[in-house]
Amino acid sequence: MTRIMMLVLGAVLWGYSAGFGPSATGFTFMKIGVGSRPVALGQAFTGVADDVNALFYNPAGLALDCPCELGVTACQMLQGVSYLTGGLAVPFARRFGAGLAGGFLSASDIRRDELGQELGSFVLNDLIAGPGFAVQPFRKLAVGGAGKFVYSRIDSFAAWALSFDAGVLYQPVKYVKVGASLLHLGPPRRFISYWEFPPVNLRSGVSFKLPFQNNYLLLAGDVSLYPDYGPTIGAGAELKLDLKLLGSSQNSRLFLRGGYQSGGKLGGWSGFSFGTGYETVFSPGLLLTVDAVYLSYGLLGDAQRVSLGVKFVPGSTPRS
Image 1 (cartoon, one colour):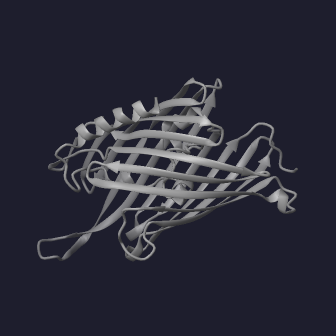
Image 2: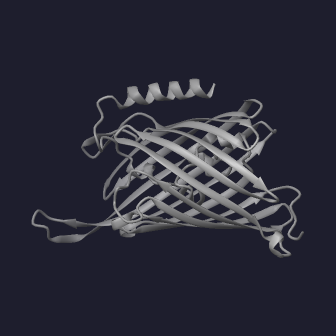
Image 3: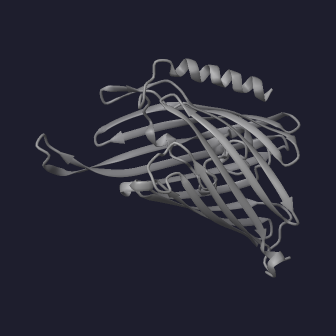
């Protein structure tokens, strides 16, 4: 079934991208990686999709291993660009999951006349928000979809559009998952004097979780394709360490992450990401998570993300 899904998604993307050249799509901010954890894994998250970030990478994950979670991420990028994203995921009735996600990007630029003289500054904003839903039609197989309202503003010009996502996630054996998703599918919009097409993104990925004692090592890989950009490969690893095994009296975990995404070609450490995370039970049934990641853009500089989340996990207690 996963193979059939990939063939269908590939055919849709091929038809949609026919005739596109480099930079033919708009909605550029929708290509920005969301969430500290996925970015730290080189955005190899399509086959993982086990937290609230599934709303941005593979909505099928909402119905498979995703806890009840509320999370926000603050991202500081190049040239003063800031991007705030967040989401809420709620699994229910054992086979279903629903969620709501959103993001707001803010930046500014200098207005100049024909001679290059500065005439002050203007603001650029992008907004995205919408719901997601997933279901397990069969055991360990989940399918999901999401819809998003997209709004952009540059100075006094503004435009909006609708975007849709679809995904599938399958766990053939314990500790192994494979997934595929088609993101940002929707009609073009007219912005100022140009027509813009959304950056349709076909993704496929796989993840392996290697448990040992009360810890694990997660390995993940993704292939991502845009109509106006060559295929990119992402790979990442996550090491979970139970701090109780190191003598801590608190019920808490430490995460170490690293990843790489191809396609940058900007020299130096471009494409490499390094992250960490901390998770602790601060109240019965409630876990607090804090994640951070550093992503290098090589010669252009770097970007940082910090995420804060709360998970509802029945039965968890602050102390061992």
